[in-house]
Picture (tube, rainbow, N blue to C red):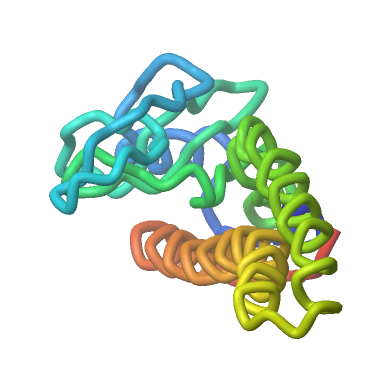
Length: 186
């Protein structure tokens, strides 16, 4: 659904790989990986899918090991949108410190309903054509709703991902001694 907004970021740190890994582990609440997508009832009575996030005062949750990093930004309410980026990365040695390579992507299950929304939009748009041809105003309304079903979920996912991506990287840079080496879309 939002594969085009994946980002790769490389940071440099004056810390050794072991020290950077330790500093990162201190701001990450350890959890099982990958985080499950669960259904929650919002205060407005709408059922939505969220990533299961632990209650923690730490800014991130996930897995930090010598081989890999798999973390996501923690939320105060314990509910993290599935469009929030997951930071996947590695730490390697670099002269004078270390490099932290991160790829940011949404939860792997965010695509699971995109086909349903697109199909619903096509069905609504297609079924509106006879009403539009016979000059019925409900046909135009149905066509607009069909187009919104095809466009809005993807637009919302991209917007949420980009916003949460900036917030996650700002939180990471605020907590660790990092400087950006490179950023680019994948």
